[in-house]
Length: 143
Length: 391
Image 1: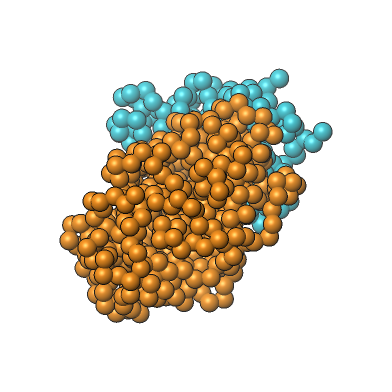
Image 2: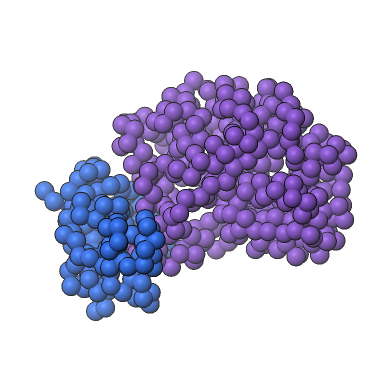
């Protein structure tokens, strides 16, 4: 039974993009935050100045619970970037959240066997302290 | 059955040889393709007054002003349109608009591919355009099109209720058919035989996709020339009337389009572009004899067959059975081997192939009843559909 040992194969974010700063401030505190529109209540992802549903300009970052479900996944077995050569294989998942409808968060799944990957499986965030400045959320199955 | 009322036609087509890597460089390849198209149209650069190219990389290797300088083209119109396959088809559609508006009389549309020569081939493209992907996707290794489409394939399998074996047969059939056509074509980039067994043994790169599910990396160029139907009648080769076309893109950012589409993995804009094309051409799907469908991946073909209404939603696996999509089948697709086996020019060589079919010039890959053909091209959220006819 193959267990996936690798995650976060790529370089850490630069943190230069001001639009993402609230997201990474949140992860540093163990929180998942996504932009929600005060006017229509929709979530907008990826972040942009205006709401993707109603184009109002009053989005606020809200903290969500963190537990989600796997919306889809792929197991990467080829080094599409030479940087990934020593990190294969790894699992990409898009995770959806009951309390953030419309958001699909791209992430890695850890502690998982490829044969057990199922769309709809419950997952919980693990806030990985990748560096002094950056904490990256990855997800693992909830049993 | 020729349809009257077409206002524009393709009157010249040109291509270069296609390979994984060409030392000739993009400029030389582009110039050759344009020269071939001009020769084919019985024209010189002096006859051209408009140039339209795809909007993402279309102006990079043979910029519009370079083409003008080399061929003595004096422009009254030029433009860069759309992304990838929606850009090449969209450029031809825009040419019909420019001609109808009297902004130009003969429009050159071309594409130069350097995917073989580029350092990171086609993977280079997306990362640079959308910085949020650098911070929120690249760290996780969600990078390069096979990872995006691998995720789509798994969701497709779940939504339709296919077994893994059924999905692999669907995708394998598409890959095998493309390779068969490429071998018959004789000028394709890849002509090594590929059976379904070969496909099943092929290396998985991003589950469930294999190397054999992915389009080529090509160095090469292709070009077409578009004029009014009136002008077309003076050209030496049979004109290929552009019966109608459509272009559509829904309001999704380039960064979000591959993951956040509400109807994932189906794209609503593709259906919308096809509807426009059918309406403008005044045809129905039943009238179409063959299609060049944007095959960046096998899974893309399966999705497009459904998005374009060529079969019902979830029915692609049935549609490709029993040789249905082969040259001798009920609905031949990607008759030269497509982007999976012939050449990857974000749809430009598929436009050329469609025109060749409708002239009756396709030789061993000639579709017997080629009177109305569809070319569909995608680029993220954008889609361009052209419906071409026989004169």
